[in-house]
Image (tube, rainbow, N blue to C red; front, side, top):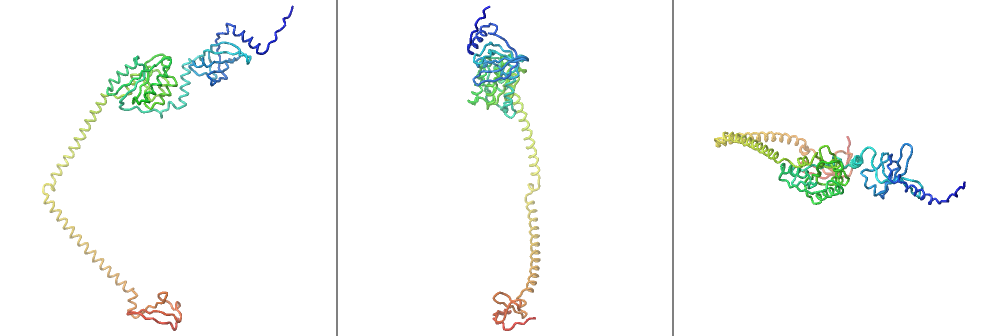
Length: 403
């Protein structure tokens, strides 16, 4: 048997040869692969690189940006998936891999996972925080409505607003509420109302539908527009059991569009009833005040001062004369006591006065330093002045005698 001479390949030739075999295999052109994601990496270009593995093996996989942009959820490590794609080989590396064209979670639906992923992300950023919620105005002059102009929801809102608070102006901005571009249109409508200061409160929503129908209100662009709105927003999406991301971010959630209209405005008939009650209360309070003041006036009119004012003046005059007499006595007694005290003090002062001592034959000796009170403070030859009761004279110290 003749053994064929083996062909010599370059590495590039070999890899391209194997790639051709894989690409020509019809079974590998459309293949479903189930497994768990690991080594996930989202490239800035939009491409997604990962490894899909099970308990026994793994295969490299890539999902290019065009297909990745259509995903409703963000793949994560540890997530079990069902992927549709093509098996081929990348000649540069010499390894085959799965080129994914479509992918969905294995188990929970893609929309459910996308909802929980976005909810978790926005909650962590504080978009659901109670501190950010704005109060609704008590008496809105303009109510803005963002919904489909052809849906039943807008008519329900009109009916309720017209019945409860017909004085408010209703401004409707028709928006696409499902399908491609709906989320962007809703977000744009919210921004327009804010830029134009077009309403005091906004109702954003639509009637019921499937999860897919309501999905526009689960998009991040809508959530961020609601959060950025300076106008308070009531989210009214679907039926009572339907919850969307928009509900969590909005300042208030209403179970239905009709309920949103009930919340947005007061009931004019209740306001009138309250006004009538306040009116009656004010009337009764005023009536009681007038009655009390009238009784007080009657008592004053019956008083003696008004019946005989001359008699009242005479009484006051007598009281004044009595007080005047009493004040005079008090003043006289006070002056007498002060005079006696002053005389006593003057006597004591006179007894202690050095002039009194001098009058009895004593004198005061002074030198240049003042009063001489001791022979120790002078010496022979000093000049001194001696003050007597009727004058003074100078002298010179000739002798000093001690005790």
